[in-house]
Length: 119
Image 1 (cartoon, rainbow, N blue to C red):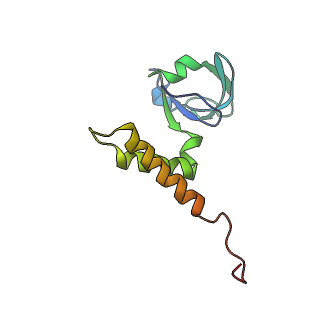
Image 2 (cartoon, rainbow, N blue to C red):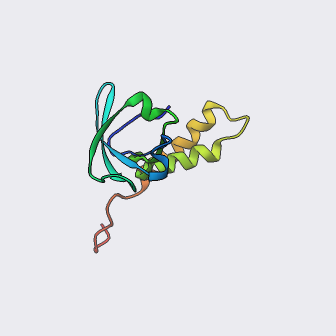
Image 3 (tube, one colour):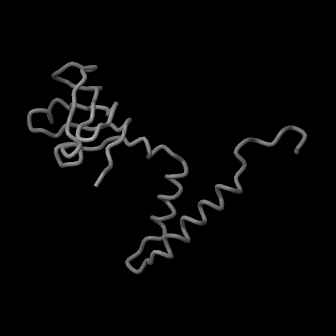
């Protein structure tokens, strides 16, 4: 089940909306509903604000197109490591080792380039 968070982009798959290719971005998440802004709508008005229930956004009525977590480099590195470790016989320890390798590499990678003097 997908967690609904700010920044996600969804396509409305309702029968009357599918041909319009209506895409909406989550701008605020409440307890039961999310506030959205229409970014693309072939038969409607882009920029219009709307809302949808969180349960409905998680359902087959919407397709998640963009998730802000998908642009985080650490997340992508962990996802690649876990995908590489995945197999029918993979154990939790296999996944943990794969994640640990990524974290160790991340810690060893300098966050800023060395200065010209080489310090």
